[in-house]
Length: 251
Image (tube, rainbow, N blue to C red; front, side, top):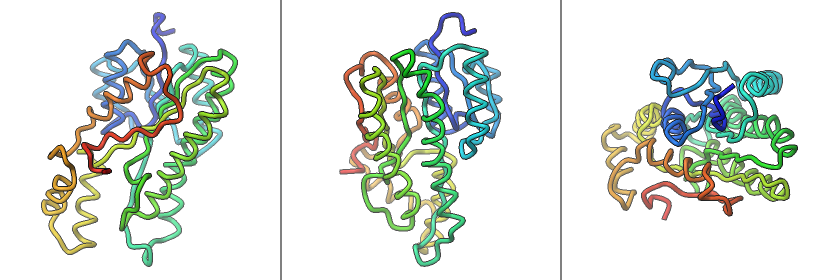
């Protein structure tokens, strides 16, 4: 069990935004479980997370088994953070089916399967919080990321629809929409975009900063702070929202 701490499950929690979310939720008093394909060695060594489960969010059998195992061992999942996500970058005319399916399977199907797995127990208890990591790209057109943007638009539509369905059970469902965040994913995207546009990665990053009114690259902790708020009782009357955390880059 988790010593009476509420339990939070964070998918894709081993690095980047997910790791920052784990640190924030642990600081806020949650027992945190990471579900990922990569073991969060530093978070485990520091005692930030309670445990780690190998989790492929695109496979229903492993999702169902993982959720059942976690609740049997540690108790009810009070907060689910659907943070696992991927990206690739390409022009639409060159985009492959494999890229399309990869982005949608992780970014959207994973959110669906995880949500479906935790909802029955949350509905029985008549409480729970689900927070989905969407993206600024899920609210606007983004050249070279049409497939990724489409998957994040889907996450936002799913978030709003599920929020309406489960509100009578006292369950809140929201999404956060990060902007240009300093992560390993962004490091890869800088290289891809530079190659596709004939620029240098530094020039691409400088453009990201110019497009952000607050004048800097976003840090994972900026997103984690908002997730902490949405997980807390301070946001008890907020549901179905897609909250931008972009430094104004979405404006």
